[in-house]
Structures are given as C-alpha cells and as structure tokens.
Length: 137
Image (cartoon, rainbow, N blue to C red; front, side, top):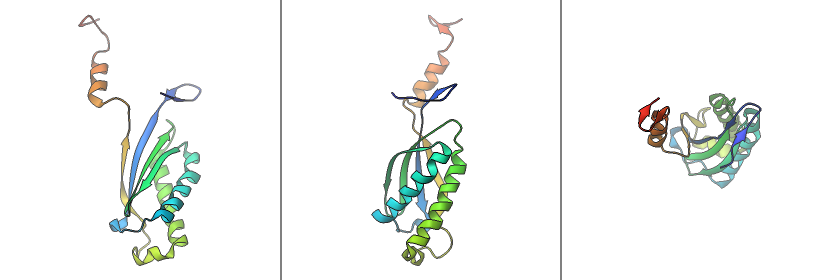
C-alpha cells in the first residue's frame, strides 16, 4: 500500500464522487465527458486532489480521487461544478436544448470514502485497544 505523506503525517484518503446532471438529462457523451475530466484535472491540484479514475453514463459521472488532509473537499466540489458547468455549456451549446436554465449539475452529489478495511473490522480493532490477554490493562 502506497501512503501519501507530508512533514508530519502519512495518509491515504480516497473518495468516490458521483455527480448527476440536473433533471437527470442525458447530455454526457465521450466528448463532453473528456472535457469535464480535463476541467477536473486542471482545478484539482489547487486543492491537493489527484484524479485516480473517471467514467460516465449519459446522466452522471463517477470520479475516484485522492485527497490531502488539508483538502477542502466541499469547496473543491463547488468550484469544479461551477467552472465545469460554465465552460461545458459555453463549449457545447447544444446542451442548452436539454438544460434550459443556468444549471448543469444537480445541486446534490454523492461522496463516499473508500477505505481498505470494512467498518466492522475497524470497530473491533479500536475496541480491542488496551486489551491484553482478554483483559483491559
């Protein structure tokens, strides 16, 4: 396992982000997805975020990324949604036929952490701390 680090810590912060097109309109194709990915890769370094994987369906996108403990994830997501919405609508004017207002992305999103161990294993590990031979020391 390769851990990220800085001067005082080591970490591995992976996230799975799902962004949905407003009204679930089917506007994503390979060209629009590629442009949305380029915008993500342009903005992400400013927030200490690194793209790991990207894929899309017609009405949403799945993004796997790594972050830093100082990354402001919600600020990054808002900045990305704002910039990508503006640029994609400008560069692909046909989208306006399906999305008639200023919005491109739905206001809501799904963000999941992607840890290595299942939660129940972590809970058992934490519960077992300070216990030797079955007894609390």
